[in-house]
Amino acid sequence: MAKRFVCTMDEPVVTTAAGKLRGYKMDDIYHFEGIRYAKAKRFQNPQKVTPWEGIKDATNYGPISPILRNPVPSGEVKIPHRFWPASENCQYLNVWTNSLDTNAKKAVMVWFHGGGFADGSAIEQVAYDGTNLAKYGDVVVVTVNHRLNVFGFLDLSDFGEKYANARNAGLADLVASLMWVKENIAQFGGDPENVTIFGQSGGGGKVTALGQVPAAKGLFQKAIVMSGVLTKGMMDQNVPAKEFALSILNELGLEEDEVEKMEKVPVQALIDATNAAIAKYNAEGKVINWRPTANDFYVGDPMDVGFGESSKVPTMVGTVIAEFSPGVPTKDKETYTEEEKKAAVVAKYGEVNGNKIMELFAKAYPGKNPVYACDVDGMFRSAALDYIKEKAKESPEPVYSYMFAQVFDVHGGVAAWHCADIPFVFHNTELVPVCQIDGVTERLENEVFSSFLNFAKTGNPNCDAIPELKPSTEDTVYTIVYDEKTQVRENFDEELVTLVKEVTPPRRMGMPPAPKEDDDEEGGRAWLY
Image 1 (cartoon, rainbow, N blue to C red):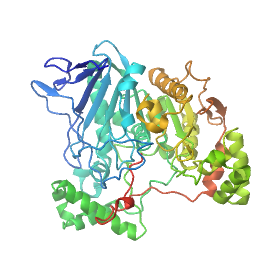
Image 2 (cartoon, rainbow, N blue to C red):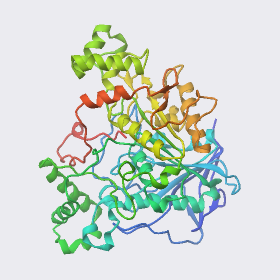
Image 3 (cartoon, one colour):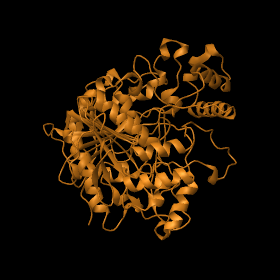
Image 4 (tube, one colour):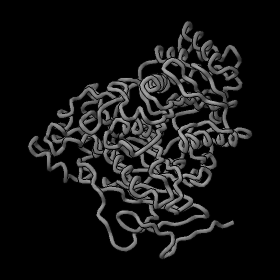
């Protein structure tokens, strides 16, 4: 049966502070795509858009931020993607809502995409589509593009006051998007005083960072961090900021006193120069990372400087069981004998540690196939536990913990990977092939979706769909484990993830150089976030 589509000369039209926008309506949901929320010159803070006369079209997604390396389509059965044209003028957001009543005062959920601070976009994953979240959740959904990598996080502060916040320009874009929400979301049926920011991976990092930005005070009331807290030091950079900037200038054929010319360099030329500089440092064993760095705009990592204003915001923090584990077995894991299961774990961790990890895994995940102990994440989960306990200690507001531990029937059995929870949060499992699990999907989606939704609306995830979840304390982490049988556990996995972290080689994030032109597609980089 055909859906009901409406997009006329005067319907649906919304009047924002800067002017009128025309979107479209599909059945019961209004779509406004590609709304310009700010504008900015390269390396500068964003400014408000110039008001316009007439009605602007809002039926096309806006351009995404340029990225330094084109991704190679991979893993689409697990994480289907959309690729889109890029421009450094990428300050665009999208809105889904079921009402344009300015008095509706619906809860607002603002999504920040993954990909660290280097890659990704507001629409890159098919599961980011806000239609079902708005439809089944009765909320207003917003997804945001912003400047990334060299365009949003190049530290040029040593080159003068003009560039004082170039290192956090991409983060400033996010603040501008929340200011736009504050000023305009009532026109889309939303309540500007009930805004939840949420994001996964780099998006989760953006959520924690915004809590450390004084200019964002009062722009959101709740926060959800999905696989977004990293182990201390993982995002460090061992190249001084000025040295790195000078290296890019050198690749462009510019001198130190010609930094302003870098503002006008064509996008691709700046990308090429940046990649060349990164390649040089990589060859020396040095690491380049894109991330916010402390200054007057961003006060710093809360684990270093405290939570400040963000301590007043109810927060939900969680991870998935396997995160970046490759999780690809040589045969169906359900056919392993007990001896083969033990042999796999011992092969990964050694005899002594392997046996201990199997014991702790059985304690944490009773009844789950022990071979999945090979895939347990110690990186994100360990950092998340530290974050939860520290914030619970400092914050008068509740901090809730979750773990997404579902095993999927793909490639012989794969435990939940980085991004596996996203379709369940957005009520979009129907869009992701691997999420179709007979007898499981509908129940699990209802549990995850309902609890996240209730938290966004009220600051408390508890609802009829899940067992009661208490807020964590500095001593006790109460975690809802979404799994074959969802349940709430107390301090259930800290021993396990601590040992896994200790015996697993440390992982450091960093930007590798772009592949050479003659590299075949197998040598590229999958866009798996």
